[in-house]
Image 1 (cartoon, rainbow, N blue to C red):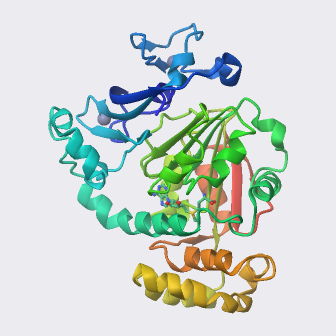
Image 2: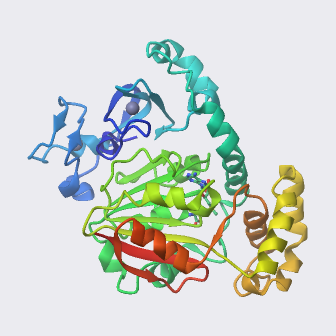
Image 3: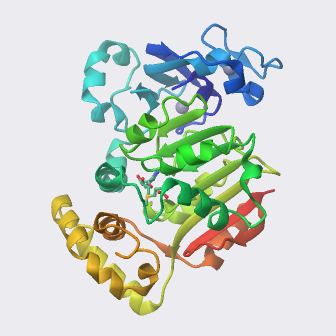
Length: 384
Ligand SMILES: C[S@@+](CC[C@H](N)C(=O)[O-])C[C@H]1O[C@@H](n2cnc3c(N)ncnc32)[C@H](O)[C@@H]1O
Ligand SMILES: [Zn+2]
Ligand SMILES: [Zn+2]
């Protein structure tokens, strides 16, 4: 985690500023043209060489905020919460210490100096509501994250797909120049590299262990920041981003609408844009049939489900909505199996109509609301 990220972060519990306690860190030198630090830490700079500077006017010395990376450390908040930084990734989940036993053992004394750090009261609720989702997608990206094509697209094709189908009609690549982008639910990070080439700074969060893969492929990029966190409780300051987007993620939370409400506060007021893509609600027969099938498949053991995902690939021809893009004529067997797994495995999978989602944008004070040309429900709007 670069020091720079501190300016975006806040405690997801009380929204307070976070203090950082580095336990291990590295430095990579960048030349200033690589950094172009116009946007650097405008409100909260904790440059490793400086005292905390809040609302400072000069921004000339933030090079070090990018060069110094905390690989292991603790983020602490006045409310008593403590969040670990492990393998360079800040972790904001209630069971983060339990999940990383080696780290917790290694720094046990440091962690224990903070009362109650290891006894997060939200743990039980988190495990009940989110653990299954975390495991499902963690395994999915571990198995398929290295495929050349994901959901039918190579990286280059995915970039075109993003620009034509997953953004507002008046947006092209030039829009992203100099922009700060947040991706909610980045998976193994396939869009992170692609879109960071277009924009200035890119922050990406995901619930699952696929954040390790996302970090691995972007660790040489000073202006990419990967965070492990829950979209329903984002550890990010409101109004921080020019562009916030979330593709195929919010409908996998316990409540798509509540996740949307949390995420909708993150774009900057007046200019910030938000884009979300969720599954389309189908007819009654389809909805009940799907619910019935998934009520069985989403409970199956992981190995069996993977086997089913591979063995049922030819049946994709029976589902026209899928068959248009996902079929054996333009994808390998394994890539088709990824799509099947993505459908059958998740604990939550909510479906929505475009009108419903547009209504959420309106309620949160968005204007210029439009549906993009993506299949499914892709809605975008500008924050007022
Ligand atoms: C279907 S994948 C989509 C990944 C990526 N957006 C893409 O389009 O390739 C859904 C992702 O959402 C993440 N996810 C699910 N629930 C989440 C939550 N509550 N907070 C953050 N990420 C979540 C999963 O871990 C998974 O990586
Ligand atoms: Zn706090
Ligand atoms: Zn700074």
